[in-house]
Image (cartoon, rainbow, N blue to C red; front, side):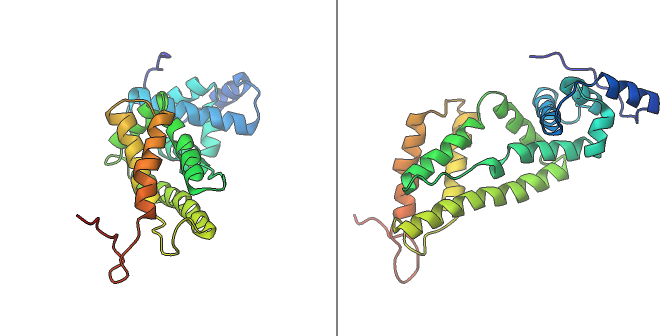
Length: 226
C-alpha cells in the first residue's frame, strides 16, 4: 500500500504555487490525466475514508497539480462522484451473444470484475459515506441504480425479442437479484466471483425466475404444485 499523504486543512493555492505545480506535472493527455486523478481519489477513499482524504493528497497521488484538479472539479465530493460514475454500471456493455443465458453471463463477468481487489475496498468506503455525504448518496441511489436498470432492461428486451421471455417479463428482475448476490459474495463472504459462481447464479437463480410463467389472473408467478 502506498504511503498516504498527510491530511491538511483545505486552502486555495496561491498563483506562484499553481504555476510551480503545473510546471512539475507530467505531460499526459487530458483523458489519461483525468483517469489518474479519479483513480487516485477512489484509492484514497478506500484507504483513509472520505473525511480524511484531501485534495492535496489526491494531487500528490495522481501526480497532478491542484490547479488542474480545480479546473475540472469544485471539490472532493464532486470529484468522488465523477470517479464513481466512471467506474459505475454505465460502463458495462451488454454483449449480444444471441441468448439470454449468454448475455447474462457476459454481463455478470463484467460486474464481477468490478468487485475485485481495491474495488471492494472502494465500495465498502462508499457505503460508509452514504449517510454522511448527500452527493454520494444521491448518485448511488439515483444515477447508479438507473444505469443498472438500463442494463437489466436491455438484456430483458433482447430476450423478449428472441422469444426467450414472454412480452410481460419483468425488466427489472435481473437488476434486483444479480447485483445483490454478487455483492454479498464479494464483500460479506469475501469469496471469489469465479465462473462457477456466475454460472450457478445464472442457471439456478436468474433464468428460472425470469422464465417462470405467471398466472393469467394476477400476473404473479405460478406456485409450484405440491
